[in-house]
Image (tube, rainbow, N blue to C red; front, side, top):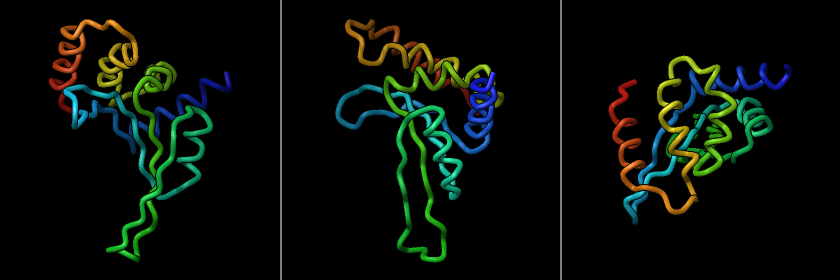
Length: 130
């Protein structure tokens, strides 16, 4: 029960402050599933990492010294499948994106994968306007 409450909390943060997207590789014509949340409150970012895994980045803009540092929690590649399996049932505004990216994320790192299958998923994702 406790895990479901934490997953629901994470879903709320992702829905409100986060992004679920396919990141296009610069060198190869491949896409990588990604989930990110940026916030100036490190406690929120740290809790996401504790519950869902992933990594943390710190960004401090030198051109705006009065701005607070911005922390970003992220999950990329094959770890996105695990994250989305936990939070998708609780998502509201980003649920459709998560449901399209989840099957795609499950194919990351597996060979052989049908390129047409991946292309269809990318096309389906690109049609979602949110």
